[in-house]
Image (tube, rainbow, N blue to C red; front, side, top):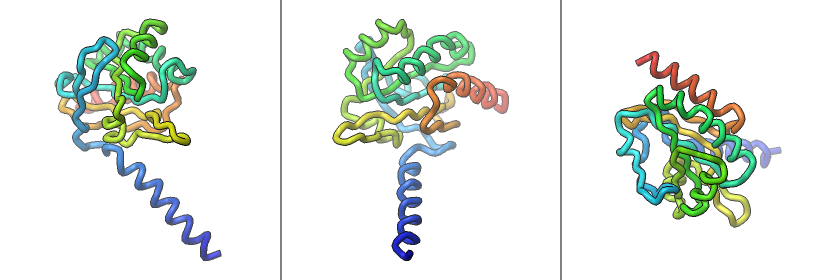
Length: 174
């Protein structure tokens, strides 16, 4: 019985440790500079003055990631009207992103974090066996570069609508 009672706090501590790796609401968003599917380098600083929807996703061409990307694409005009840009990040290559955008008709930037540094900085690196990938997490960053909302393990089907609703609420409160 004692073993079980010690295991639970350790398990909870481990879970808290993972969450602590993510930038907290109110914290400055970690800076980054990554290549996009277009070959250009995109940084957080380039988007100062705009809201940034920084979403991490596991893999190009997979069902959940395709649904999530299609929904962001569907709502792209609404994000633009709200002075927001969408940046998708995965550990896939620039070439993979280029093919994914072409096949799925995506007109926003997908960023390649091949060395996993940015995904780690945002506490979004996951592992399955020997394979590392980006967990499905999103960070809503305000025009000053401050994290205003963190979404963990999102539902790709409803995520874009959730982000738009939170964006409207946050903008109305400023």
